[in-house]
Image (cartoon, rainbow, N blue to C red; front, side, top):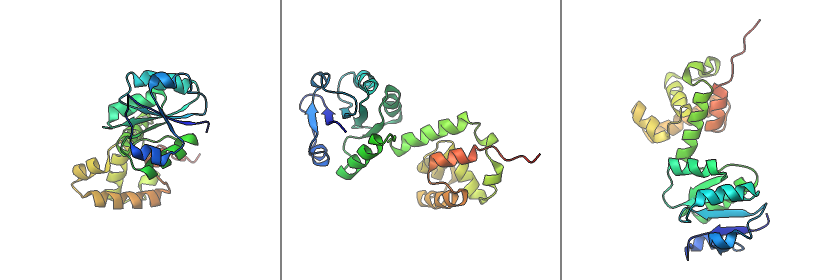
Length: 204
C-alpha cells in the first residue's frame, strides 16, 4: 500500500482515525488531487463536497476508496459502491473495525454494513430467479421455519425484518441462520443465495 489518506472537509478529523492509522495523512479534496495514485488507501468523508465524483475519479486511477459516513443508509451506500468505492463504513466506527475494513478492501474485498449487504444479496437472489427458482433439494434439508427464514434472508431482509415478519425474536432468527448455514454448508448470506440459486441436478 503506497499511502493512507483521509480526505476531509476543513478541519474535520477524529482521534480514532489517527489511532487506527498513525501513518495516515489528513488532507482536503484539493490537496488530494495531486497525491492520490494507484495503490493508495483513501478514506473519503461524506462531508466532502461532490464526494461521489471524487470517488469515481480516484478509483479510476487505481486508488482503493472507502467512504466514511456519519449517518449510513442504503441509498448513500449504493451510491458509494456505484462510484467505485470498495468500502462504506460508519465514520465513528471503532479502531479495530477501521483496521478490518482496510485489510478487506486492500485484498480486493468489499466492505459494507449489514443492512446494505442484505439489500445487495436480495437483489442478486431476485436476479437469479428468486424463491420460485430456489433449489428445492437444498431447502428440503431445512425445517419449515428454517425454510421461511432462509428465503426471507436470501430475498434481502435483515434479521430484524425477518423477526417482525415471522413474529419471532432477533435471537431466534440468528439461531435459525446458524442452523441454515450449517445444513446448507455455507458461511454467509451471499453464499446462501448462491446455494439456493444452484440448478438442481437432473438425471438423464
